[in-house]
Length: 312
Length: 252
Image 1: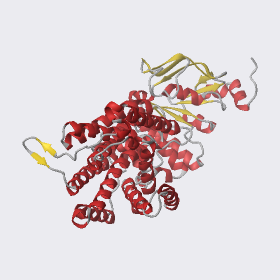
Image 2: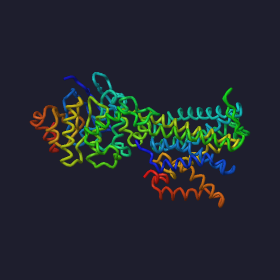
Image 3: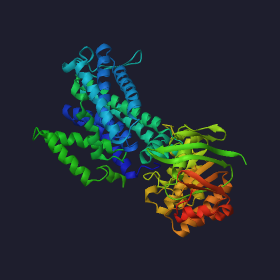
Image 4: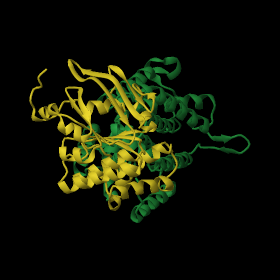
């Protein structure tokens, strides 16, 4: 949509970004760890919402591409300790997987698309379990180094401390958010939203609908892959549960809580998701039940998500 | 007059029901044609076949001399075919301007530009704004299309249909559900656009006043076939056409 960012919103965004850059000076390791998780889920959810909120396709299989990104990055870092290569490799692998599975998935819409993506996601999950030689099976991949950023002859930036890795994730996430912001306001973004509103009308506007759905699916896969690739250097391990469908549910929940039809909705939702989880886990191990209750309350209380209050 | 669209021996069945049961039709450029007939006569199915929403079981469709029988819709649109819908079909969450901007961008090959900004597509935006002025919706430019009145949505429907600059444009009941005043607006507009834009319109209509005042040529359909065609005066004179509209059974 042709819309101008309002002044109060620009101020909020500016303050948040400044606070994020100052965070390592104010907070310890755990808040930084949490902030990294929030940023990763933000990137993951933004890609998911390009498909869901902008193109009208609800994918339940994004964990598959998240896992391809994570395993891809981990394998590269175990062989060549250079974070840039790891991230790039994870993103490319996830994008390729999304392109191939997308060709099969975007032939369908609505519940058929959702079920197909769920099936493909679980297929990747079972590959993560069974292909022991590559994925390490249920042991996963361990000892993944938080490798330095190296550009031969130019740069060799060690990321041994949590603070440094936090800054890498922050900068990469902000770049990913800016690119997505540009995408949804471009002619491509308009085309995707038009397909969401009316597939048949879009065809009669001269749009090859399936090709554009595939483009959206692939971009969502690239974002899932980037999010996944940022995780192994943080955790130092990758195990099959990250490919499980419950991981696919995280961007769905974050987006629904934050707001489907607001650009920043998935980011606000990712923040809420980890805040709520972090607080509830202190009181009960049945945190998922309470998260469910809160999601239902937020979705019903804030129609269009929490972030929609900024859009009005 | 040269033939823009020719339909030869086209048939389409849905199960045991022959929706289109052997239709031959030629639509020459510049002649405003109205297709009439009772409900279930196959009028909308014929539009769906001509525009690629459905493919025929047999027969051939040519557009500007080129076979398009099994061509995908978006390719037909690029060749100069377009349509509006009987049931409201607009991009209801998008602002009015962007509803007509999309087909304009698509025609200009800019619909997939990933990193440009809409504001920067100045030529396309100017063209879309001109269309809004043509259909009288310039003031509603930034309103969400879903918030427009029914009449204005029908006007927008027409605007989206003409935005690809079609040579041939099907309008499926453009005046349905409109007040008499809105109806006059729509008809004046079709006549004006027909003259200005070098677009040949084919309208499907139930309102006989509209049909006889607007059309140069009338095609009467019944039960999946073309029953009669001719000038409004010729059609008015035909007895069997009146029978179809009175709902009487035709004697074989």
